[in-house]
Image (cartoon, rainbow, N blue to C red; front, top):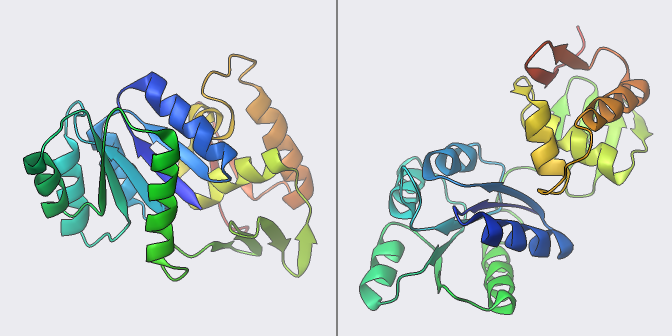
Length: 222
């Protein structure tokens, strides 16, 4: 399952992302409200962990905008505030649960699991994405090209997943690095090119286009 963390305290965000990744979730992180709203509106997430005090656009407004647009993704709100009024305001805007900082990581994981169970298997975006002859099942982590299954390593799959979730859009190298590698990764960014090259060998040379100076785009073969 894929989670989105919208939290401007970067150390906390990275810590949560690492912990939830170790729990088996795919985790994306953004640090401001507007970007959080944009990402959550894509409809690819099973749950959003949303801080209230965010730069630009606070969590209340993000939550209200998502609900007004018809998005029913579960939202777990985080805040350093304390008091019944704040909790009521968060729930009134459409949040599903509320956690006050500082909180126990064990409690956060329990809340996340409870919200995901409540949502059930029918919730969220379809785990199967089709682009031309390519089918990617993000839940089972299986890839098919026409009728043949293609075996990918965990990293290869994660790179492909970033492309297939935004099929037809340009995905920058920086985006792939941020979501597939550790947030503190300071190695050679050209590692992305290595994995793109490997994917092209396995899936064919025309499926992943290079958009010079911008990134990569996954599109169906003509």
